[in-house]
Image (cartoon, rainbow, N blue to C red):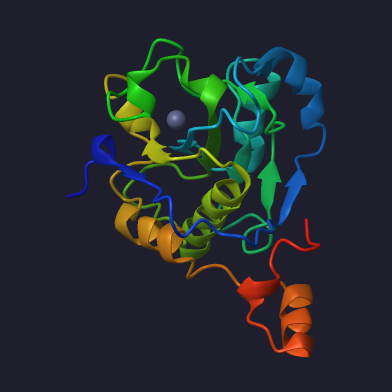
Length: 224
Ligand SMILES: [Zn+2]
């Protein structure tokens, strides 16, 4: 069985996506929590990002996960809804500004193969929470896996020095097991690396058709 403490892969320098879009929306009212659970990064907010950390909430709803932010206990940049939530299949919740550090890994935790074993992971990482109870009866949906892969590709396109994709369990094995044994890490890795989950945005596709270019040829010209 897969061990979440082993979940890590590094992004190759070749193959960085040029096109990125993400269907995201700020969770209503979440900005009220920011003064309590975000902090100015000690690194450059674009060049300093080195890792994306994958978490599972161990709960059953987006609202439950967000309540942790309002309570000032922890925070994360994105939240991937569960199957029984109406946003499932449509969008991810943006929960903290990417430019700020969120509180999703303890300051003294590290792993020798992640950013040279540096601590203060929150300052040089982005955190994704997936709504999942981590019980054997609660499987991750295909959409949750592909959406998480899309968020990582979005980050890969945006942050030039992003290298590591790693589980919370690997960074804090004494306390954490998320995203758990049921998370299909190998499939997720495949989708991140080959971009299989990434449709070409309609605008780019139409421009490409009009000019007879492949979508890759026109990327980066005008889309956000
Ligand atoms: Zn976690």
